Length: 424
Image 1 (cartoon, one colour):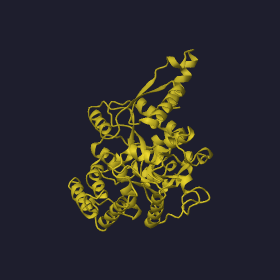
Image 2: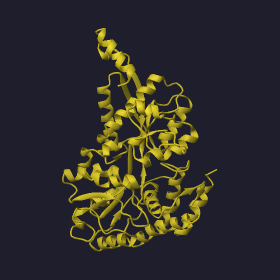
Image 3: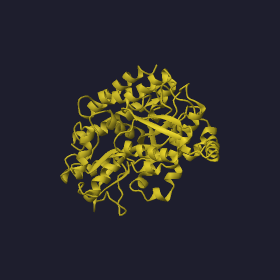
C-alpha cells in the first residue's frame, strides 16, 4: 500500500470514518483477454478491488489483435486512453514509433515492490528499448509447447520412464515418430493451426530460430544465409504435409479437435490450451493421458516462439500522479499473485513465482518452464508482432507453400521482397 494511502487510511480511522467513505482512485483498465484468460484476469481484478478500497479497477475487454491496438493508438492520441492496459511485447517496437506508452523507471518499479532482476531476462529485454529503458512490465511468457498423447506413446522409444518426450533430437527423429503414428492410425499425426499466420508463424519461426536464423537483422529481412534457413524451415513443414503428417489447412479449433479426438498424437500450440486439456481430462471426455513438454530441439539450438502479455501505462497527459501510483500498485500486486495466472498455462515472467514450491507442483507447467530460457520473441520491428505484416506474409505466402501451392524458395523470396518494402 502506498504511503499516501496509508496516511489517508489512518486519518480516516482517526476521524471515525470508514475507508469506504474515503476518496477512491478509479483506474480505467483495458485488456484483450477472452476465454479462460479473461475469466482468470477478471477474478484477479475482483480480488484486487476487494483488498484495496482506496483503488478500484474498472475493466473493459476489447477485441484481440489489430482492433485492440488501433483503439489504443487512436484513444491515446486524443488523451482518452486507459490508465493501465495489457500489451503484447511483440508490439513494443510499433508502440515506440507511435509513442503510445510511458517509460517505467527503476524507482517506480521499486515503489511497486519490483525490480528488473525479478523477471526472466528475455522478457525484460522484450519490454525495453534498445538502450534499456523499461516500457512495460512483463506478466508472463507464453509460448508454444508440444502436447502429446502419453497413452499412445507408452512403451515406445519416444516416451521416457518419467513420462516426458525423449529421443527427438533431430528433424529425422520427429519424422520417424510421426510416420509411426501414421501407421498406427493417427490420420494427422502432428496437428497445429496450419491454415494461417498464427499457428503457421509460430511453427516456422521456431524452426528458423532453432537454426540460429534471424528474420530481420539491421533493417534487412532474411539477410545473408537467413534466407536459406527460412527456406529450410518452410521445406520441413512442406515435406511433412506432403507425407500426410500434418493436417491440410486446419483452422485453430480444428487443430485442437484433431488432438482431442485422437487423430493427432502430438499437438503444437500455445500454453493457453493447457486448461482445455486439463478440463477435458477431468470430466472424462478426453479418453487418454496427455502431457506437455518444451518443443524438442530438432535443429542446431533450443528455441521456441514466444511472446509476453505485459502491463503498460499509456502516454496519457491527463493522468494524475495518484492514478499513476495506483497503476504501479496494481502491477506490483498482480506479479505477486501471478500463480493464479499460471493456472491458465502461462509461465509467469516473475521469477519468484516460478521458483516457488507451489509452482513446482503445477504440471505440466513446471516441466516446460525451461523454455523461458529459450524463448524466441518476434523480431524487434514495427512490421512484426501480433496482427502485423509479418503475420500477413505468413498467411499469404508460407502457408500456401507448406500446402504445395508454391515452392519454399519462392515463398521465402516473395516474403523478403514484400516485407522489405515496409521497413522504411
